[in-house]
Amino acid sequence: MKYIEAFDKYVKLLEEKNFKDAKSDILLLIYEIFDFDFSKWTMYKYDEIEDISKLDTLNEYVEKRLGHMPIQYILNKAYFCGLPLYVNENVLIPRFDTEVLVEEVLALSKKDKSKRILDMCTGSGAIAIALKKLGGFDRVDALDISDNALEVAKRNAKELDLDINFLKSDMFSSLTSEIKYDIIVSNPPYIQSDVVDTLENEVKDFEPRLALDGDVDGMKFYKIIAENYEDYLADNGVLALEIGYDEADDIRALFEGKNVVIKKDLANLYRVAIIYS
Image 1: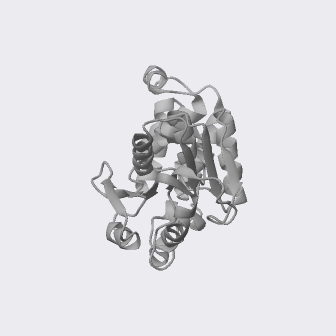
Image 2: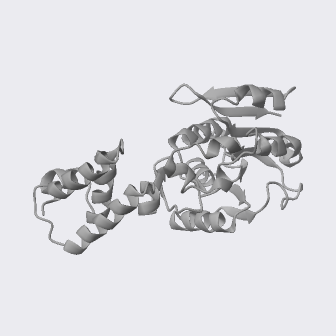
Image 3: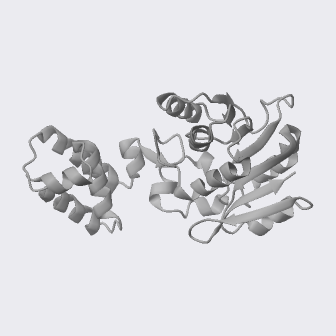
């Protein structure tokens, strides 16, 4: 079988099951399994596949995709701010939307390396890792309640040779107010509980509910942050949050009396809230 024949075969299988990104899904799998990139694919796609065992791997991966497992979990790989990250079903898959949050924090800090950063609900460590790598901050701390998520985050930091302090903590519970942060950043769970079960299969059946469910109104973790963040924020510090596209008014109300600036993402949706102390 030729590479292009395998491509056509598996694209057809996915399209018959109404997978809207069938072509890009199969191409990503082929690139990963056969160590291809665009130029290699262009050069060799009409060649015969020599390593049949890799064809078996492709078939196995396609079966997982037909079961709606996200490509990122199949390959245990995702990209965030251009950085390769290991991911599994213990962590949320990093979204491009969240890169806006990183961009805003970098702009706020003006890449002052002396700034102390705290990333809450770190999951895969994506935000903390991107800030450490791109901002070069001397101190970046990151916390999560999940041991399994922290294991993934630590693995990612190690593979990218980044020194980040990871801490198991139920929100602020394991912190001491002795350390003050210049910027506290968080992408907490913010989807309403009854909405989680209506999400596409790739999300509701595979991604950890712990990282998605923000309680009945989606505001549970924002409320905890609002009640406590100032105890851990340095003078003139800033709080930066990813928010749901429909939560801007709720966030403004929650932080009433504060200078709240809402930023939009590339899709022109409300995505980031900056709260100035």
